[in-house]
Length: 314
Image 1 (cartoon, rainbow, N blue to C red):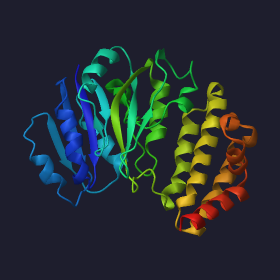
Image 2 (cartoon, rainbow, N blue to C red):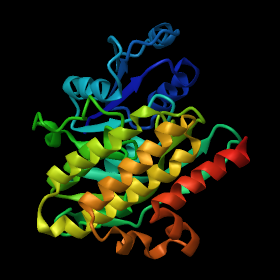
Image 3 (cartoon, rainbow, N blue to C red):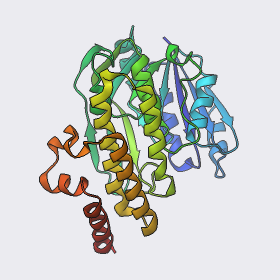
């Protein structure tokens, strides 16, 4: 069993060596490490070329974004399974060995992961119930109980034979639309319950950064709506929309541009009303505290919360 580990990177010289070392130190050695440099201006190229390991393939392109880089890696991959690893993350020494034991006959394997917060080295454990031979049609709840990032999952290369199964390249939140599509096409999904991946969290991380690209969340959700248009996914799709929109409206509290903050919140509630007409009764809010769901359901209160947060944090 051969694994293709795809690592897109952009000016991550400070962290990249730890990512590379974690792959090269694996107890299972039948893999290729594909590093796609998305136009870095630091010493990334020099760092990578210091490694004299034939399993490493390095490609440097002009800056196109992470979606393009991951797709470039997919097209270069020769393994039976593809593993997407961000350049500031790293995997446990026995990760590939354990994956090799668990993955046989599965299209997607999900594993637990740790988040390592750079500011204080706090570790957050993210775990999922173990299950086997699931399909999305029989378990549509997967889109809401499993994280929709690629870095704690491994995928059969067969899923990418369809050339349309690629990351969107023109939006910021490129991962969750494709992950959901792969979930839908997979004939067997397994969650193994092992902690195999470590995700670095930086204050300036791409996902946490709030800027004008936050509006791309609507484009990502539109792609998901096109993917999950069957009746069997209807309720879980509504819950996903409410969850995503709520997450990003509340996150506007860190938006420095107030006009942008208010515009996004306005647009977000319009999107909610157009796509989940009874959103205030959505089951997403069932486990939210009274205060949280009261704020999250109301546009005016959401704006007030974000404004007060900014005032206190100054």
